[in-house]
Length: 94
Image: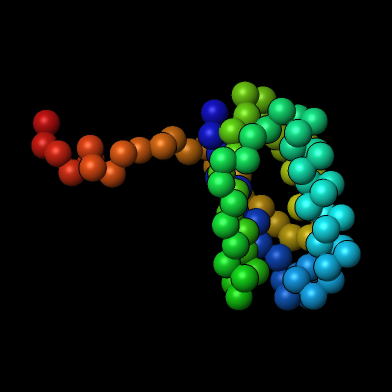
């Protein structure tokens, strides 16, 4: 199953100006995701909006929730199940 995580944090919690904390947070997150057998299919940042977007793949939603714990220390997240679509196919008439 694929999921999109939209993570938002406040400027006060932003790690951009704290490189050591940023490295530790993302190292912890990568280790946590790997341990839970979660694949990162895409990662995007909207720096000025203090928002990160992750496309994740996992067969175990409970393990995925647990694996995201390092990010929850910084802010909030919205996790939704998504399916990949082909935009060109959506324009054809059937």
